[in-house]
Length: 305
Image (cartoon, rainbow, N blue to C red; front, side, top):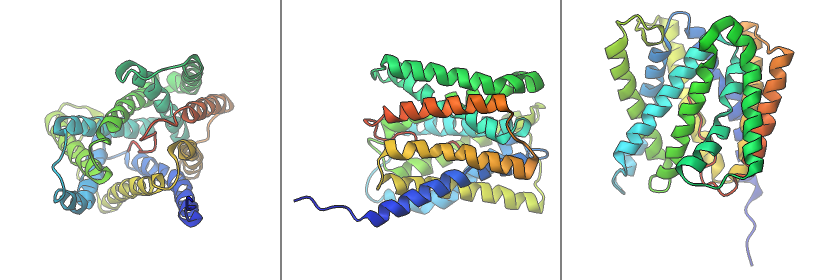
């Protein structure tokens, strides 16, 4: 006779997941606050430095049990998450927070497409249709921003594409590596990549890769970004142990709620009615795809930042 699982961990996990997805947009809001003086690249560098420091003890404890697997792929995964982070932080400097997050959520739709191309996973016509509709929704959100910011309004698309490849690698690596080791290696790889990028291009007048000495209050915000990002990943990892990925995944759209609130509260930004049409289209398309991803082991629960 099978024993029923204690319902309390599931309730706690569900509460934590809702809290996490509502709270995670704080990372992007803090990056937007810093964006007038601190570059996206420098913010990302600090974010990965904090993650590496916090995850270090877990990594070295895990090394006692087994060797790190597929080092090159893990480094590539770190480069992808670093690229995603820089692109998101650069996006929120110019665009409303909620609209950046909404456009970024074409990522699971991109993962669906790339999984069919790279991993050979079956892509039925229903999922293909939902993915196509989701892309049109993203274009609806981008349209008014394109009139204001030109090609910069497509930065969230590039971020979503980068994160989609990151998730493909996560699926492959999670079969041979623990979550703690993966998170440390992504932080360290992201830190190395951003260090090289900043050292190489900071003198080339590229706004997103400039280096400036942060002031005292800016240091506090930079540390908060790293701490919130690392803890957010931990909450998601905890929740995934108790609740199935296909149930949890749609909850990530609470990020749009959190981003809308923070954008309005801190910056006076609120999506226009036409943007809401696109946002709702993206959400409905994404939820449909999520519901058809029950066979995926890792899902779409690990965040970009």
